[in-house]
Length: 123
Length: 126
Image (tube, rainbow over the protein chains, first blue to last red):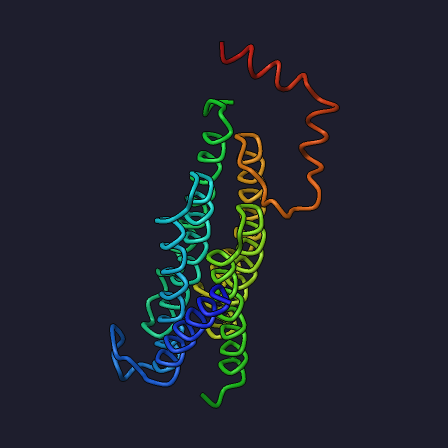
């Protein structure tokens, strides 16, 4: 019963934050005369909310591999974040940042997995 | 807004956001490292690929659109490899499964078959 109440409170908080993001437009960062701004504002905030989940797991994760998983997921999220930022601002170099971030995140995750496994880096 | 490419790209980006959000919710909600890894890696990889494909549809065959397609290829190549390496490393380093897990075939195969790997590792460490 107590777990069900906690579940309900969490669901209400998450749904209310999503409702605030979707139904009220919070202006930030984009110039208002560019195209597609209201849609991409909402995309931006939903991705920020997902990144908040990853940060929660990085802070709270009980073991080290949990944190590495959350860092990996955060890296993949940032790639989508860069491509979402690239369209309404009209600056195409955001997608270059996305490609570089994907490759760098892959190398970092492989190195951290080797480190967790207990091997040396040159193996 | 009246262009069909823009509308299709927005639909793709919306689907990708849906998958991203539920993948990250799984990252918070699920009880175990392996469950979390499985849910979040698959959902977030597919969602980000969908966002990038929507970006390609909205930008067309420009330089940035082709770069978005290239980024999809990189993500599909790298994300499963890194997730597999992470799961293997965590299992070898001794992270426990959830207590309601049904089977653990990697543990049984490690116990029965290949003990040479363990011996080699120990010999190399000392």
